[in-house]
Amino acid sequence: MAVPTDHLDPRIGIRDVERMTGLHRATIWRKVRGGAFPTPVYVSEKRTWLASEIRTWIGEQAERPRSARRGAANLGEHANVGAPGPQDRHRAARRTTTPPDAV
Image (spheres, rainbow, N blue to C red):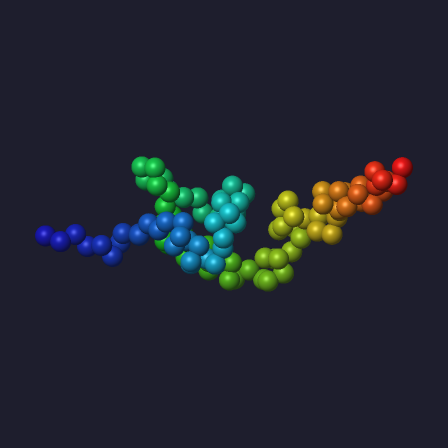
């Protein structure tokens, strides 16, 4: 007797999640850590996601207003856009130092 499979939820790997969402692997893991993305299910040593959870997440993102998806409140560690970063401090330090041959 055959077992009906229409009720089973397929499990998908990270590459399939990347293809479905259009997100980079690092972004997916950052969102998982932040609680903004479904957590994977561990099967043995392999991490997989339930396809239905990913489809639900994609649907929720489509329903959110664009401003809520891209607003500064949702940027997390990138909320200080425009603030001087480490590279700016380095450039400023290079401009204020005297070249060794000018002494």
